Amino acid sequence: MTLTCVALGLDHRHIYGMTENMEKAGVPCLGYWTQGAPETLDGYQKRFPDLPRFATLEQALSCGADLALVSAIPADRADLTIKAMQRGMDVMSDKPGCTTLDQLALIRECVAQTGRIWSANFSERFEVPAVTRADELAAAGAIGRVVQTVGLGPHRLNRATRPDWFFERAQFGGILTDIASHQIDQFLHFTGSNTAEITNAFVANYANSKDPQLQDFGEISLRSDQGTGYIRVDWFTPDALPTWSDGRLTILGTEGYIELRKYTDVGGADGTDHLILVNQDRCEKINVSDAGLPYFTHLAHDIEHRTETAMTQAHCFAVMELALRAQEMAEAQ
Image 1 (cartoon, rainbow, N blue to C red):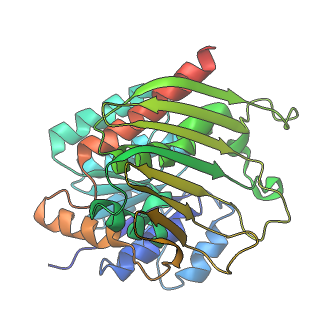
Image 2: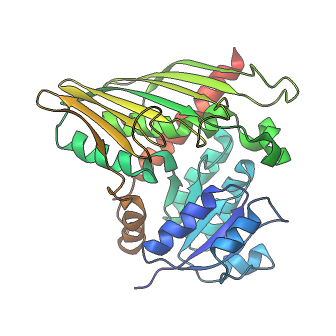
């Protein structure tokens, strides 16, 4: 069986990796549809010059694809997801897959009615080889039982290239809904938690008073029956850093810890995907850039065989619900 996909909405650069990695997994893209001319359109056309652009959403929904890749404006993703599932497609959505609890409820209802897969591409886990290797090590017991994660998600603002919707709270969904969904995903995954209690949630605009709806800082504390987690996200990556983020993840176990320096190692080795492993027998830094990205091939398998090897549906729902509730809690203060 040859699976195919279609891209619906090109408003975030994550659509580049979503399309490329599904094609590498043997799922060719039939084309794309997007509203207007988002800033990402030129880069997409250069990366995928042979892909046709569908003139209307209806044409894209009728193309016969098995999987829809949704990376529209965050507030519009739920509607596109539901339309695609109602046409018989499974969906990989850019994170956040939705921006309100009401949207999440509608997606839950549509999944229940259609039996389709709704998978959010938490790219800070699924598109980072270092996380692949950390997952293998943790699963093998290299650090004992995981009891805490600390996830740091700094981002560069790149104000000049940001579209208007990026600065509108109703459109981007809030910093915790958006960025922190990555770190919530990693906390649940590595601790083996089905859900969690949000013990603290906070957002602020510290340095962008001219954009009052932007949130440039956020943090969350989580607790489950398996462990605890701390999350910090922000838009403060300085210009001197040679990449968009010094994103880090520390996974603490009862017999050691793993630290990931995902995108850069300031003052250390060149390149990306640096993993530090310290346990009872080893204390070393490892370059794990060759660890692979199994999420995409696993998702293709799940579409064909109706399994849950890439990510369970319950996990995807739990991550987004926690992110949305943390956002709600932070803004209620």
